[in-house]
Image (cartoon, rainbow over all chains, first blue to last red):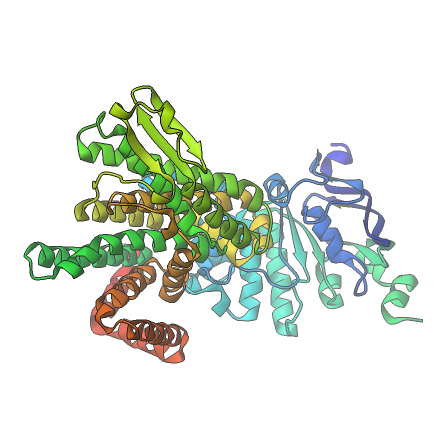
Amino acid sequence: MSEKETMMLEVKNLCIQFGGLKAVDNLNMSVKKGQLYGLIGPNGAGKTTVFNMLTGVYKPTSGTITLDGENITGKAPAEINKHGIARTFQNIRLFKNMSVLDNVKVGLHNAQKYTFIEGVLRLPRYFKEEKAMDEKATELLKVFELDGEKEQLASNLPYGKQRKLEIARALATNPKLLLLDEPAAGMNPNETAELMKTIRFVRDEFDMTILLIEHDMKLVAGICEELTVLNFGQELAKGVTSEVLNDKRVITAYLGE
Amino acid sequence: MKKTTLNNLITCGMVLAFFAIFGGLSAAGILGNKLSGLLVPIGIYIILSVSLNLTVGILGELSLGHAGFMCVGAYMGGIFSTIMQNVITVSWIRMIVAIIVGGLGAALFGLIIGIPVLRLRGDYLAIVTLGFGEIIKSIANNIYIVSDKNGLHFSFANAVNPDIIDEATRQDIMKGPLGINAPQDTNLLLVVIVLMITLVVLMNFIDSKSGRACMSIRDNFIAAQSVGINVTKYRLSAFVLSAAFAGVAGVLYSHSITSLVSKKFDYNLSILILVFVVLGGLGSLRGSVIATVILYALPEIFREFSDYRMLIYAIVLIFMMIFNNSHASEILKEKVSALPIFKKRSANAAGGDSK
């Protein structure tokens, strides 16, 4: 296999400009299949903007995004999800007034093939697929130890479980690449340690490529294999985690002179 | 059995029981003429409020022009029946076709409005539907249609020139501000059947992947897109479905009164239906049904009190608002669901789920 084929995500010369502000400037990044890749940087460096471009919320001003050999630059969010990118959000975005189970079933939406008419007329395929989806969703919830709360409203879950549910919902769309936006935000050290286990587990169990944004250096050092550091929208450093985290420029960017 | 299925069956049962009891009383002559006359409009208004609930409660979009879609259905169905009066002589067949015509007509208007507006986010739909309701009312107020042996004559804003009409075979179909006189084909049984079909379709829609998609868009637009939901498609389908049922209600309405005038379909009617939906609880079809029955019947029952009836109406509105959102109602709901009979049911439902 050549080098190119093993790449899950390739970002080339990615730029986005909001008026006079270059939020992300000439970013290059390659994530290998099955890799745990970290995107770090001080507040306002443009990390979430990169995620928003990868998932189609923003259209890049220039540059290309290639997922598993397919060019997905500038496609609509729903299209990009169908190509295989799923994400979680920095400020949790669950379907709050729906049950935990239904949240995951919305993630399974595109896997359900019955039509509008079959759903309204309750034809056999509706029952067959709904039952299969219930089982599949419950299985996913079991992985995240949420199956006990599946009838509850998503908004009634404690914070840590809401984070987990968001990951479960993203996984339900059967992605190739999972983007996690600050998964450890607001978690205590114990919860973070558990989250690290979960992320590793997801990678191994689902054979997933994971790209994550994080401020918690313990988590980053603990699970990320490679890193890209952003500062003011530009790449500051890139490479193997242990080397990047000891880079003088990175330490300066985080802690100041 | 699933909990939602059980809940839906209870709602359908409630509606059927209500109409069976009062329809029976009315047939037996125990219910006065005045109250008997309320049953058909109540049924029609329930169709309107549950269909509006799909847009407002499930999809989370504000529509202020539900009366406009009703108006489209009422006129299209009414005109169809009037023209076809001598072609299709069996009234119930004519009525079924009229219902389909009116429903499809309203759905078409829903589509025309929805395609541009539902691509946008925010309150645009409220503004556009508000305008649509007023425009369609004015247009209906100005159309004249006359048929004679030469065919149909149309005119807008002015009555059809009498010189071109063959007086011997003249039949006025639509008389501008004087509206239309559709045949009286609506009866209580038909209304109840259509109402039940509406309820079942809406319930099945909501409890399917389409309904879940709509609710996910309501709860979080960006997250819904991120899990691959085609947002525009589902917003459009729910809105069009809602409009279609408003049209169906319109057809039933135009065939239940002797003379239909467009003045009826004004802003106040849209707001009235919205009040039924909001007070019944957004997203709750059963709530819409109950609120419609209470709030529609009350002012009619209290008509003797003349001026005071609006006072009573206002007080009921306030109490429903307070009750719906209060902590006390939450406690009451918990207490009711903790009653032995409900406990047994929910235990059964849970058991059914795990199988």
